[in-house]
Image (tube, rainbow, N blue to C red; front, side, top):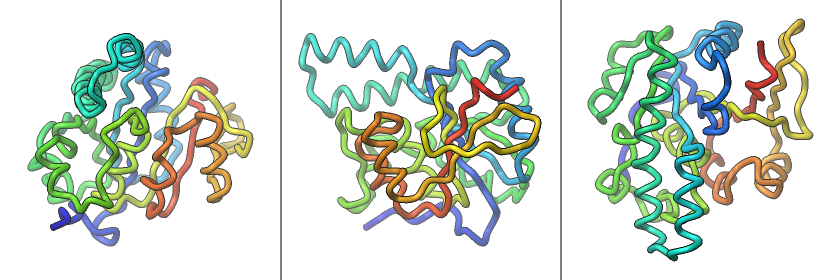
Length: 224
C-alpha cells in the first residue's frame, strides 16, 4: 500500500528547495539564500541539502571497491544527514525537521512563513521507502541523487513547486527579478530531458519530478 501524501495541494502552499552540495563552500551562503527567498512569494519552504563532496568521496570509493549499490545509496543518505547539519549552521533561524511526525506538524501549524531544513530521516529511510508502491520507489543506485530525493519529498507533501538551487545555469534559463544577476528557469519536458542529458540533474529526475506542477532551477552563485 502506497504511503499517503503528508499534505494536499489546497491545504497549504508550499515549496521544496534543493540546495546543491556544490554550494556548501559558497561564502555567506545563508545570507544569499535568505536574500533570494525574500524576493519570492510567501510559501512554507522546506529545504533539502545535497551531499556535496562527502557523497562524491563515497562515489570514488565505490569505483574502487565496487560496493553493493543499495548499501552505497543508503550510506549517501546518511551523509546527507551531515550536510543538513552543516546547512543548519548557516540558517540558525530555520526549523530543523528530523522525524516524520515533525514534518507533519509543519502542516498542522499552517504557517506559510515557516522555513525548515528537512533531514532525510523525516521522509526517506529504508522503513519509510518500503511503504511505497514499487513504481513510486527511488532506485537505490547512483541514478538517484539529492535532486530526485527533493522531487520525492515534493510529491510526498504535494508541494506547489520544486526549486533546485545550483552553481550553474541551464541553457533554457530566463532572467528574473530586475536588478539581480540571478538566473532561473521554468522548464518544459524537453528542457527536463536536456537537464538530465547534460548532467544538471540525475538520471531518475525526469520520472521523479513528473507530477510536480512547477520545477525551477536557480543559480545561487549569481544571486546577490
